Image (tube, rainbow, N blue to C red; front, side):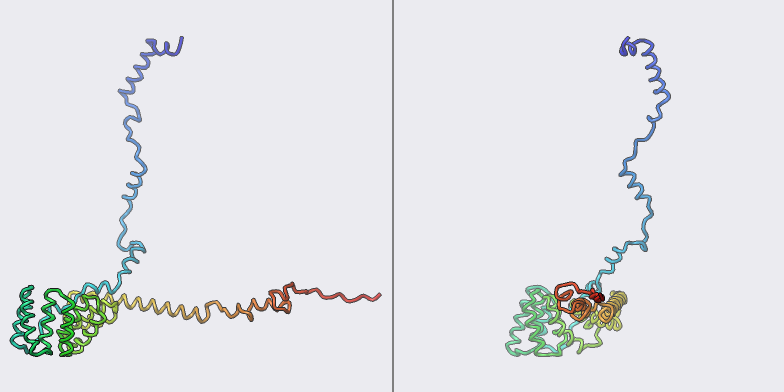
Length: 306
């Protein structure tokens, strides 16, 4: 009987049906088992179970990036104070007084009207420093920088002690990326007002823009002694960074000096009179081993008596 006939016989069919019933009623061992977990999921679960790193365990790279924030960048958030500073008390003519009120009122129309008044005044007194200064302020109100710079310069030439003219000129030059020129006028302003905190702040801002952090710190700390500012707490941290940088540079210079004095390679020993030069003397000649030949170190044998 063939295999197919055996399976199709009634006893065989009964046996298969019985096995199927047992599996259905009892359940197979693998039927209730959970499907295998992919390796990617396992790795993700293991990573999730790891403890979170504390702030003290951040990587060296993260620490290096944190230290790489320069001191000048920290001080870069401080801005010049001249735009909000009070105007100097100066004796003004009626035309200049009215022009000043128009400029401080703001707007393009008032600034144009102020220039008309100032032009009339300057026709009478071309060197009036206040008329020259407020002419510059009228252009500044419209954010027209270059003419403002020219009028401020004329005001300063007419009255070198005119602090507001120096400061507004420096402010405009700074916005034109001409901070080196601005520094000269801020020096003059500080010389006239050494005990005025906002004047010191303005010069410190210009020094920070020039990456002269040491000078900026001197002015900022002096200003903080006169008046408390919200950024005064940054100065101690910046000063510590500067000291650490100075110490690193000092150590590097000391190490370089030691290497140049005794730890480096003495090139004089490698010359003609040095070690390689001595090789030329082995054969008494000028070549590497004498006259191009190996030195003859064999001694002649003494003659034997017959």
